[in-house]
Image 1: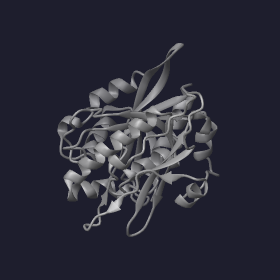
Image 2: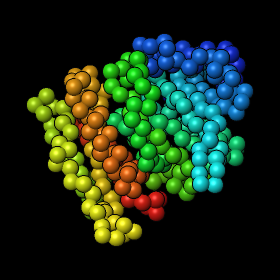
Image 3: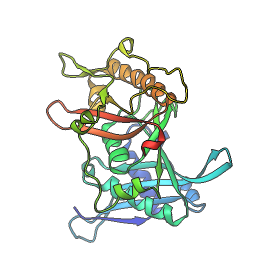
Length: 304
């Protein structure tokens, strides 16, 4: 598969991005970012990068993926600081799992560094394993922010019907962590055995129903994180594992009520963990007939 990346700037190229959005997020024209907004963004510091397939070396090229972002601000005790807000990443279904998304994000990382910014943020559905693996494992982003129903009720075929809960991830582009994940000598993904050896436990182990779909653990069985008499020295585990469905979109298509249970279960669990000082630092995907997915939660920013 031959893929070429290039920065997109013209109205004609933005029309291609419009059409690609319709293919990636089918079912709702109202969710499409129009060409005139894309043009306005890039004329004011924004960035659109496209991935093109050359069909095995022929002259014809097809846009198969894109990433779009724009400048933004985040707020610190010392005042506002600039960042890059990455709003959309889309790849045609037949080109997924071939490294196109990773290549687009890496190109975005290179350009944002040249702009002199040190932070990129974006949101994604925390129950989508493919996105979690790319964002956390491959790219080295971290997360300690859960946004309930971030975009209200979305009407496209992927998101329709569920609250649009999202993780907001932080990608510290100059950090050793991110530079190492994007290098030629990137760390190989860790598996569950590595974390079990480090003492991590799954705090919400799922049960598989008769329909082969995973059921979330009852929150009645969830033991709140232990409190210490000394608030400065909380007695908490340094590593925890949180399980999510390995294929949430298939689960949603087969049992919508179960998908809603998972949405509310994940919301309650992650909001509590983030409130107590945990952050997402890794993601483990186990392949197989009954695939399983786990977030790795680390206590405190010192773990980075």
